Length: 443
Picture 1: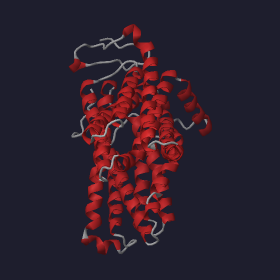
Picture 2 (picture 1 turned 90 degrees about the vertical axis):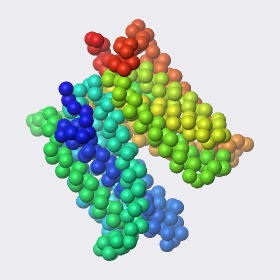
Picture 3 (picture 1 turned 180 degrees about the vertical axis):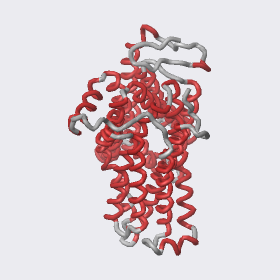
Picture 4 (picture 1 turned 120 degrees about the horizontal axis):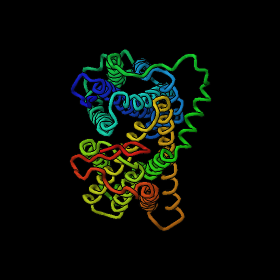
């Protein structure tokens, strides 16, 4: 049995700590970059506009995820992750000396490319370290590590930004006190790469005698991705969810502070409630679910829960009620993500796994990008041409969009599961649902 413990010397533990350190470095770099962009624009009175520069720089490379997945399939996944961490270690050091918005944009752009290259390799290597019935627990721990590092990175950035003892250090760079964080980020990437040197896996580089071109391999991965009906259903489901859920982050603050007249801190509490819902899901599913059967059926249920809870949240004026339903929506969203990633890892052949995850993240990021641009436009259009609260209207429509998408996914899954409807193990504490895509596993 392969260990799924983070406080051990197992391969999974090494990968988990490396990934958590890498995530911490990514979060801290993003926070510090946004603050630096705002600092650079303060002299011209454009700090609000310049603050989005590093965010835009990190959105654009999203379309390269498919190529990143190809690298994961062509080369040793462990080496791809190590190189990505070492390159980011060097690149992030450049932010310590950055004095212009162009430099800030370019460095964040390149750093995000190598973050994207690392991600499919990490996802694709997990099944080599963890047995199928522990994939849900493993992915739960990865999500907890990623999001637990977010508030920690924020706190450390705040502490060092105000610390007086860093003044002499930053004089060697751009002079901004917050730049000390970039030195710490470089160290986290170095530690992440160092840990990976001790990771033992079964993956190896592709046979150099294989004459397939990069284009043909990209086509192969895309064809597999598009022609696999179950995979297509699952991916479409989570993409539709992201298009709807993106409106929550784009318009949530405006809804709470302008439509309902709550304080500025209300949005932070709402996002925290959503995050706690996700973490709650990770804990529950990692304990009860060892595998699952007909994944689209369960994803459909989770999307229905998400859509309904958001619809209830945006039909309430009580802050406590809103937080409760946002928490429930976090549970539904977390379940969709966790089941999807675990399903892809379990059912995809090792030689295609990197490209499948690359395509998956490309579609997911594209969905978020569409949501970011459309949500604000529709809200503004509704405000100008109709006598309604445009923000509230878009939020409710996005909730209905998720709900309807969930119903369609549920129906597709129900058609497959109707013959053997129900859980295969009635003992809830040993809930065991089959991960295999074609035949059921014997009890």
